[in-house]
Structures are given as C-alpha cells and as structure tokens.
Image (cartoon, rainbow, N blue to C red; front, side, top):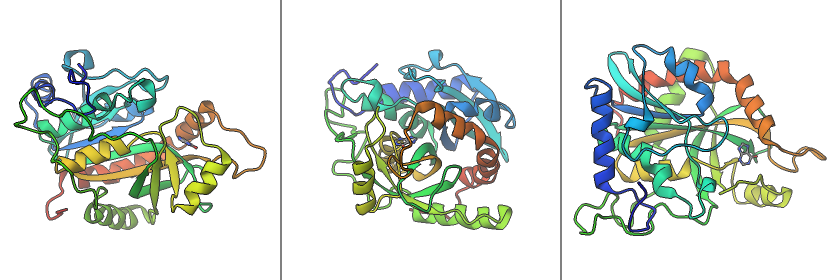
Length: 298
Ligand code: HPA
C-alpha cells in the first residue's frame, strides 16, 4: 500500500477497499465505534460479546506493526447490540524512515470510512505533570505535536483532486471532543466512583525516551503526559468528522523526575500489564458510551 504519490495521507480508494473488507469479513456487521488499544489487550477483546478476529492479511492495505508487543490484531465485537471494532496494537511513525503516517492513520481512517462515528484512542505515556504517577489513567484534553511531522502533508488524492480524504486546512480546535469527554467522566464517576483526570499529551516521534531537559521544557509548555503515538490517529479521525476521545495509561515518571532512574521499554510493558485490570474495568464502562453517542455533537 502506501500513498503512491509519496504523501502522508491514505488514499480514498485504499480506505474504501479496507472498509468494505471489514463488512465482508465480519459477516455484514456495520461497526459504529473504533477503539485503539495496546496489543496486550487481545485477550480482553476476545472475551467481549460476539468477538471475532478479522485477519489483517485479508484486510487490503492494512499495515503490520513491527514493534514487539504490538500484535496489530483487529476484533469485531458487539456491545449492547451495536458492533464495534477493537484494534489491538498500532504502528508508530518511528517504524518508518519517512514517518509512514499514511500507514499509521490507515486503520482508524478505514474504520471511519466503514461507518464508525466514535473513536477512542489509548496509549502508554510518561508523566510530565508531577501529580500523575504510574498506574494513573488520564483522559486527553488536547495535544501538542512535537514530532515535526504532519499527517496532513503531501498529495491526498488518486491523481485527480476530487475527493480529498480530509478537508484542506482542517480545524483542530476540539480534537478530543469536550462533550464526549464530559459524558465519559460523568459515567465513570457514577459507575466506578473514579474522577478521571485530564491532561495535554505531547507527541514525540521517538524511538527514544526524552531527556530530563525535554521533560522540563514540556512541563513549561503545559504538557501533562508524553508518548509516541495517538496524535496522528486523533487528528485524522477528527478531520473526518468522528467524535474522538483518548486516554493515557501512565506507565512511568518522565525522564529526570526520579533522580538517578533510567527508562526502558520493559518497564513500560510491565507497568501496562500491572494496570490491565483497572484499565479493562474502565473500558467496560466506556465502551457502551462509544456505541451510543446519541445526543453528543462536536
Ligand atoms: N516517553 C515517551 N513515550 C512513552 C513514555 C515516555 O516516558 N512512556 C511510555 N511511552
């Protein structure tokens, strides 16, 4: 796949082919919501009502993650009678020399082309805000793009400029829908007695962790948590008209916060595993909201 014109924007023709394959492989389900999780959550997804795995090698143009711990599995499930897609794992821009942004946004954009109206994006993140600690779940209120990359750059058409996938100069003022966030916070508070905090997420390209100076600079810039994903999918989903929300699992303190400590990928995956139960309990409450967004508008 890859945009043959060399841009960061998936081609509409490729999105349409994948969107139709989702319908066919799921036996005709019309999915209304799309959730992106770390691939450690395949087991949870498999246990959801009427779960079926859609083989990604039969989804045309679908990208295959290369990072250990990111399986990239796609599940179709049915929540309160409404089909939803669970994407367990994702690809990251650091896997590609050129940023590969069309591959990163492809699964979410294809899900929207298929008919999903809400998108929920999760990630592992380091804390920048000193009051957030490993194990905390934090909704995204907004983001800052520190990757130097733009998902909206490059050719966006199949040779004729007729059906751009994204509007030109797309608005980005409510990427993480304030009304959807409000509904999630209210419901989580009522059902679980948890007051979900919010934070501004910074997207760093990776594949390194930050320096302590970078973490201090991000804090001064108003950032609460930092990671290497989510922003491309959030920006494109919002530009395609979906209602978007996102949540970080804080897996570690940002570099330099704990004097003398160093960061590694194993620490992040171990922390993610340790938080599995609280994370899935939260998702069980959030999923029904995503499939029934009636009354919520951007
Ligand atoms: N920095 C960037 N990405 C991350 C981190 C971090 O500290 N933790 C998990 N993903």
